[in-house]
Amino acid sequence: MEAEFHGAAVITLDAKGRVAIPTRHRAALLQSGKSLVLTAHPDGCVLIYPETDWEPVRAKVATFPSFDPTASWWKRLLLGFEEHVSPDNSGRILLPPALRMHAKLERDAMMVGQGHYFELWDAGVWAAKLDRALAATGTPPAGMEDFSL
Image (cartoon, rainbow, N blue to C red; front, top):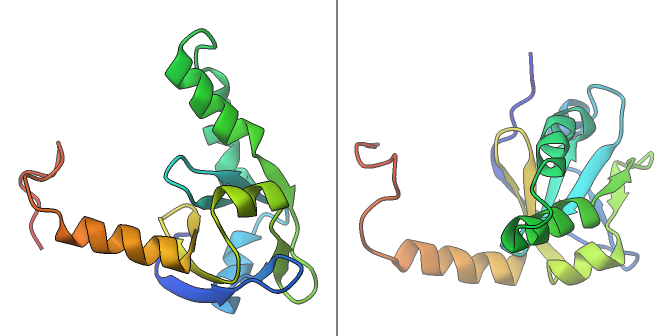
């Protein structure tokens, strides 16, 4: 059965730029015994995928047309920032400086489950984006017109 990642965790980067993967997600993130894949998201966060779940995404991104300016930038972002990392014995992963800079990660962060992967946000950026999203009014996005809780 494939792992599903849900929930949000407040985590802290240490002085070396490492974060500890929450204990409840460690085994599922590394169930295949392979490394984790980190990359940049255009909204300003870091994506954390189990390597086996990243492989089909990577294959699709690799097919983006190189002469389309928008597709090229998405490809540069998703594949250009791609890093494979393995947790240390304490369950920590080192976030590369380029990804920390992209996501403005300094100390306090939010790790938010998205089903097959996690998003890692700077806590301040997360709070600001969440406030804007919750304050926005209007019609639901396409495909969610009939959604109800």
